[in-house]
Image 1 (cartoon, helix red, strand yellow):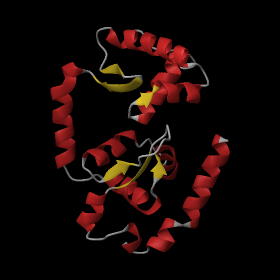
Image 2: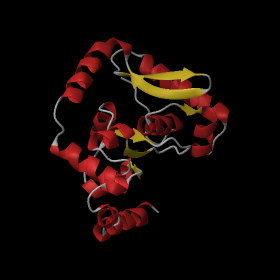
Image 3: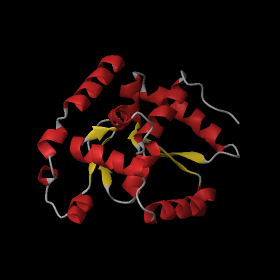
Image 4: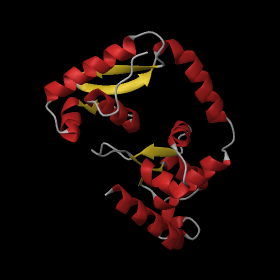
Length: 188
């Protein structure tokens, strides 16, 4: 199995596309990686060839100067069954915790959510999105930010998160502010 080196351009693109979870334009990828669109095209072709080898659970889709990672078509039914099972079950404690943070602090990036919770939240975010409780904010950022959905607010019977109990005090809690400020200093 061939993989991309983490420091290589194709490795960087693989990481960005995985973290983004949505199609990104070649132009945008070139700006983020500070290379030319031609460099992006070449690296994506290399990455796509690696995924075309047998045994990979992901594929790289390239369409109209955009690229996105997706699950392999051979695994469609398995993934569908898994997601259906995840969607119908009760929310787990970690999902409820993440949903609470997103509700009171959203829109929030995955990195900030993970900093607050102290654990990887990729699968939790995906499950909350599948259930229709959380959605990615539609902006031009490479790194998506998440907020609760209108369906979630409708289910709770409120028209705004500001109507939730203790919203003002919990949305600006000093401990959370300190955690996020520390994370920003570390990332800088």
